[in-house]
Image (cartoon, rainbow, N blue to C red; front, side, top):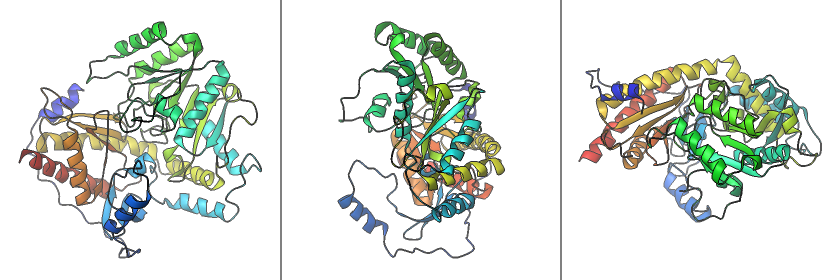
Length: 466
């Protein structure tokens, strides 16, 4: 745990009482438009939708705008989840919506493999320009993050002629069988659905909680080379520059730099999985940029298109061209409407200065959370971590044992929802809250969300102490 954070959290201060929750009233009165209730839709959902598809909140969306959402009963919520980090540009960004609608008036699908179209090429050009590194680059567009990861592995195998993949403890790379093999967390993703593909190996991730230093992790990787994963048979090492589902823990920069050196030494492709961390979430276009490392391949999705389903792989041109014509693609890959939306979302990030906004939000969140933790929940907020506005708060039962407190975390999420704030948890022990609020959210909405969080934390602490 960071000593700085620990010191901040230990202090108790006599700050002014929390501001009352602000009510943001839209220009036009908002009412439910469906005439249905959440309870009715929950019942229909349980009867019709597979149990394995979980929903964090028992409320159904009716409409949304920027960082606000209204359910079918007309209840309003501040959205700090952003569709799982998909909405860096907010719900229904005007530029994104306008671009998508304009494309819909022309054509919605041809399959790029049948009749190609310019939006695909234009987005590939933009991604190649944004990705770190001075070398020539090319891009592949697909539909989902898991599909992007699978294709990155396929490309790495074709480029190296090797089968092996090394991933890390706590990493999340998708829910298909290949990506589940790489995902480093059993429940709920991998439970009861094995066996998983071969030639996938797991290396330790640095963890202050578990006492695993960067050197320990690198030693573990070298031991893996000696015991199970012959380096000459490894096609790629894949890592999230900031763990997503694993707890919003950044990879130490020296670790990322060492991985680059190891990959260069053994002819291994380094893949940065930027699906959750990309497009401004951390204050740079890609989180790996903080370390100064240039990966061979980058997987992207989520906030690339402001809510439209699209994903991709960006990489060194010579590596991307290792697969023969026809070996990459998919019927819906690089859908023209999603491509148009992505180009508009990227333009909005540039024009509205959202990279700097992410950095500023991260600094503000850190300060506020540390102060609230010290005052409302002393010795319970173990860590505040992340890069830019990609932050997590980790809760424990006490500082002496640092036992993860998933129940408190779950209670905070529930109390926040009752008060009108959507939050999501994460982490190997389910005891961290992650912040994924749209970077376009106003200061007033951010303040409202923090105020609700404080009230929810106080209620959860009181409930646990009762």
